[in-house]
Image (cartoon, rainbow, N blue to C red; front, side, top):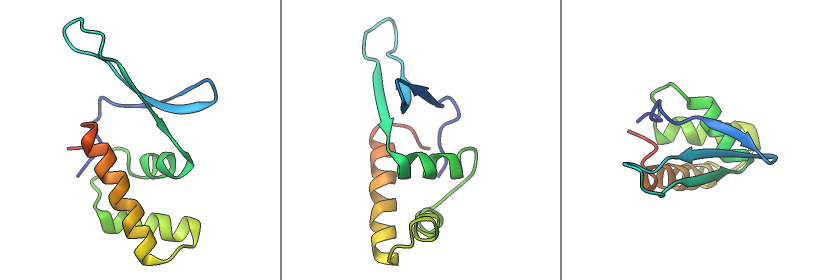
Amino acid sequence: MKIKSQYKVREMADENVIIMQGHHGMDLTKIISLNESALYLWQSVEGLEFDIAMLAQLLKTRYDIDSNIAYRDAQVWIDKLSECGLIE
């Protein structure tokens, strides 16, 4: 999978966010805020093909956590991005 190239992280009011514009003039703009670990994953894989194993390894290495926790957290991250339509 891969993060869709049209989405970029922006810093706004001391938060890292992704702004999703509404379509066809409708006011459906969404702002997604990223915490530290979500931002780390985003920046680590932006522009790259990735899978859950890669994400889990990134989390395990950076935060010195158990593999099971890293995989669970990576899956949550994937699920959230998928739910928002940010990955392909």
